[in-house]
View 1 (cartoon, rainbow, N blue to C red):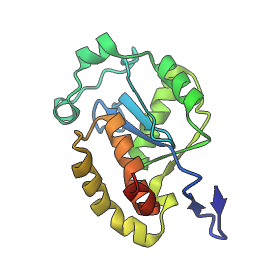
View 2 (cartoon, rainbow, N blue to C red):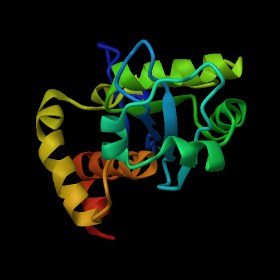
View 3 (cartoon, one colour):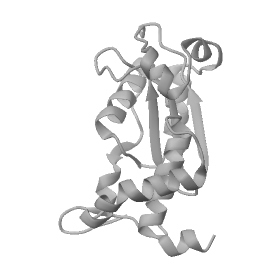
View 4 (tube, rainbow, N blue to C red):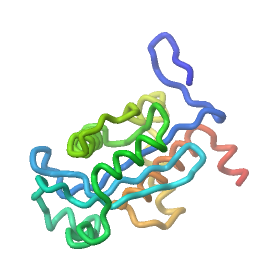
Length: 180
């Protein structure tokens, strides 16, 4: 990864980023907690984990459930422990990983790792650090095109991480995407 005098990150076709996304019990930044995390690695490989709520996590929003479609019962039955998920993220993610909702995603990441008693082995950054102002302006339109092309439901963490990956590809290296 290269930086210019402004310390802006520049990813190239040969240096591709990894992306992460979280779904949460609610958008309450006091009581909410992560319920699913998905990643899309630089090569396009996806991973996701439902998270079994930690014993101190009680918040639940039926409005959030209606958006992501994940029930608390599903988490309790199929979710992985916070320590397992945190260890998996540390094992597979590179030094930096990018998201599109840094305020929320950094909160969910912190809450996950704190409950696990661990420290992330990677730095979470905003996708905006990878983009120039023109690319930031184009991002929402390209993102919607990617969503339409993939036909995947949004608000599932792995799908949303893939959408970030593909949007970045279309903006940064459109010739590579078109050649596929």
